[in-house]
Length: 302
Image 1 (cartoon, one colour):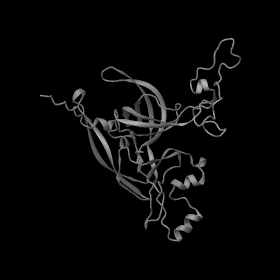
Image 2 (cartoon, rainbow, N blue to C red):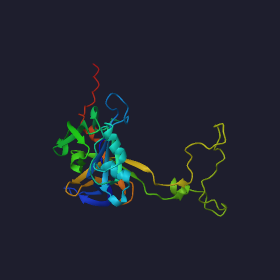
Image 3 (cartoon, rainbow, N blue to C red):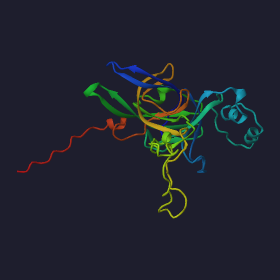
Image 4 (cartoon, rainbow, N blue to C red):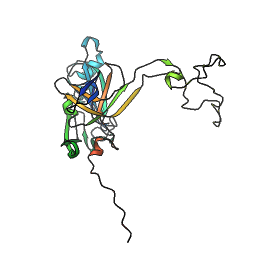
């Protein structure tokens, strides 16, 4: 997973391109997100720490009276506690704090998995800061002369930094959006899986919306349990879904807004995570940076 931002889904609208074409877009409010903590694999001396590298971000301030004491202590540098005083007297070096308000939403973005725009071999992370190189794509020209050039940039993040949409999504052409779909409750197979149902004639007795026969559930399995993955009635929606490779239409830096083409999961006001797309195949921004090679023509026989 690449470094991204947390935000809200504002809603859908349409914008017009300079050519007069209407683009259906989803408006997202992203950030600013303070860096609350940096996860790193091992501490000094080789002792195991978190076991992975990630950037923990927060979104939207929470009232102090509504925040629990652990939530306040996670971000506040001046919060007094007996355990904190005892550790300092024992010589323990405490991790740095963001020194900001408690956050309503806290998410982590792992940067050590690869497959995106973060070069995993350049990652250096500790309790106070993390540095790495990211790949960006610069677009120049228009129409048939349009070129996509890949370049790298050094990024250093410290605990307490506030990330904005123009910093994280600089020269980003497409994004992945992670959200939770609308919950539709317990539904039948016709609504959940688009089953056709049973015959609707008078000969069918009260089975019009049923799933059908279940006679061969355990055949060729050896037990009486049903086969895994059987499509039946149950909870519909309210699950985490990732929509990949959505085109960025516009970025409004002043209002922390991003307009992306197409729809995303969730209701208006739902929390989403947005990151530069990790797709590298055909149709992805990275594929456009590769020069197209014409197929070799077969040699003519003499």
